[in-house]
Length: 100
Image (cartoon, rainbow, N blue to C red; front, top):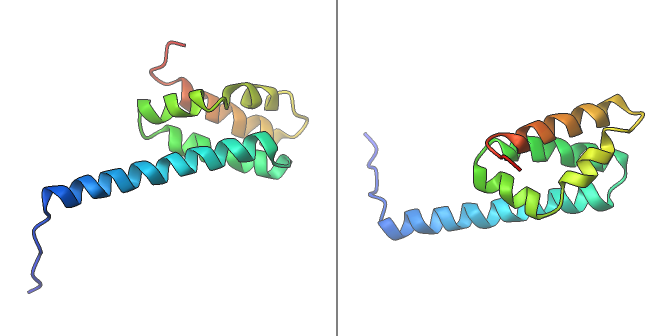
């Protein structure tokens, strides 16, 4: 039978801080790709935003603060159905529990 090592409270905090930093990096990468990428990169960024936006109100607020909403709205006018779908789904997830 394997032994489970007890987790120290400071390890939990380190893990939470590490995850928070990783999430911030993912948010920044997705925003950068949405602003500067080609069509396929923007579509993938919208898909990433959709997935990450599910996690918390704080994450959704971070995306809004990063300015991703206007480019997602402009993607709705794309002639590419994949761009429309990805941006619409990202916007819907960003809108959850957000009055603004």
